[in-house]
Image 1 (tube, helix red, strand yellow):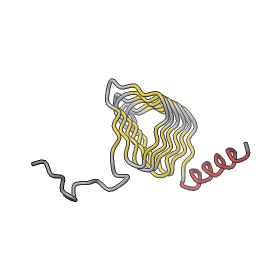
Image 2: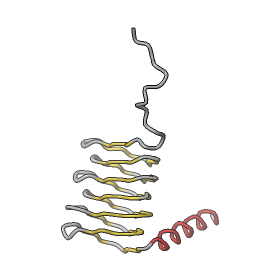
Image 3: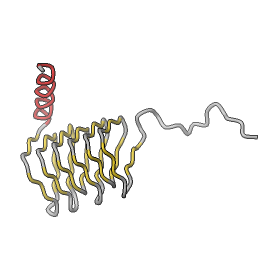
Image 4: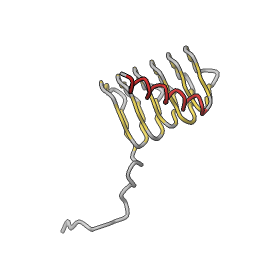
Length: 136
């Protein structure tokens, strides 16, 4: 009655899934993903993502973020290294340094820290970080 078919064509390709941390949830620890990440709760730790990271309006990240793209509508306390586009929208609040290929900052958003922009800045920072880690 409940036979499993071999392929229904509904499987998502590897790396295209979305990880969601819902409102009212607090996670302590680092998060690494090949797919998109959305945070509406609180993450205390670092994020490494190869896709897009969204910090929702009620979301909070206390830690560093390294990803391809990011939208910040909530709060981030830490260093952001975004290879492509970082958007800080709505009442987004960033407390920390930004390394981004491109930056879009809405007038209602706040940012306190240093900002380094351009694709070569992001690549240079990654090289410096990797060489420092190798030297230890």
